[in-house]
Image (cartoon, rainbow, N blue to C red; front, top):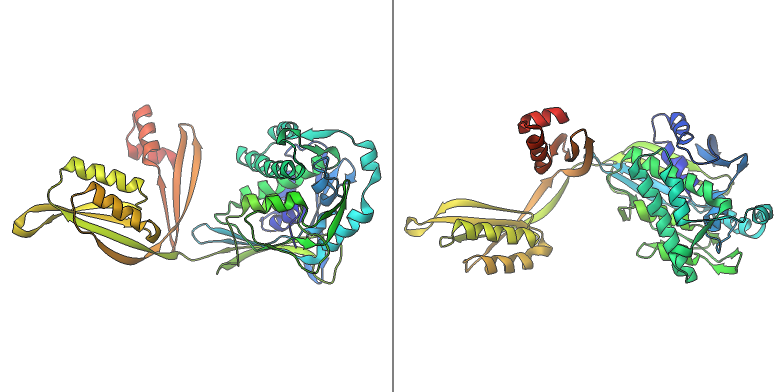
Amino acid sequence: MGAAGDMLTAALLELMPEPDTFVEKLNEIGIPNVTFRREDSEKCGIHGTHMTVLVGDVEEGEDLHEHTHEHMHEHAHDHPHDHFHEHTHEHVHGHFHVHIHDHEDDAHEHVHEHEHAHDEEHHEHHHHHSSMHEIGHIVADLNVPDKVKDDVLAVYQLIAEAESHAHGVPVTEIHFHEVGTMDAVADITAVCLLMNEIAPDEVVVSPIHVGSGQVRCAHGILPVPAPATLHILQGVPIYGGEIKGELCTPTGAALLKHFASRFGDMPVMKPTAIGYGMGKKDFPRANCVRVTLGETEGKTDSVLELSCNVDDMTGEEVGFAMDRLFEAGARDVYTMQISMKKSRPAIRLCVLCSEEDRDRIVECMFKHTTTIGIREASFNRYVLDRKFETLQTPYGEVRKKTSFGYGAKQVKYEYDDLARIAEEQNLSLTEVKRLLK
């Protein structure tokens, strides 16, 4: 049933080992005049978490700010409508799949909030608008990692670009209404911070239920999904249904679009933690979002080996050919010393590539070697999943690759970074590795 920041926050929060401690952390990140509050909640017999964002002493509904973000989009929504069924799966190798299923329960809330719950007082007394530039200043002052700040701004950028397209004005003229600015920043920042803490390797999102019908806003009546939401969800599988109302708001859509590695069914996984994020209202269906964190085993794939024998190329020519093959998309290129007929010394050139790169690799091999024939063999591979990260060290940035799967874990630092540190510090590579550990 779409997506909303408060429910995503609540669901992800339940994956944390100490959720109350994390809420304290949220209240210390420095969002002006904002307080996060976590409450236990029950829907249709399911226990979960409900998150409330207080701006001053007033509880702001996400749906209120979702569309009041932009001064032209003053929809009065109520947080809970968007349900983000997020099955989060973490592979043994460090893969975190998030499967997002929308719950229909919050849908009606959008309808009623749009029709009746629009707070006139907010619109009477809050006329200040925040531009992307001003949002950038707010985010810059937050006490969160730079990666989280980048994620928050990227989500806001998706929303601003969508509103720009929907209303035909430049992004620089898009403004976010004060009524929803702080709690919007709160919801988006909370989700980004939680995703940074959980550090998923993969996020899988189900097709998104966007709702149906129409929604009332400051400009009149708009179709569901709202133009900005639909713009954000281009390229994403979505569907409507019998639920009348706006189930996925621009903020929810932007969060899904930003963090989704792919959209589809939940992968085979071993669940290790489950989180339920609850909406405020009650419906015949459980008004919640579910996130499942789990592990998957190592995976297999197929690879092609293209090879040829050459006995009339110099070492320099072979080296040049290897460089061109890597540029053409080869996964690996290597040579072996062999003896051909009449005991001539020769080289076997082997190239590993994917099937989709085969034609390009074959063309490259014929162009840059003297061979007149190429052999092809197909192999199944058992592969470890890989996670890449950049470490901040006293000696500068160091790139690290961690491989997981089949009960194994391997860590390797980028050679070029090790070599740079070794030269700068007059150390051996072994000593540099020891320092990094």
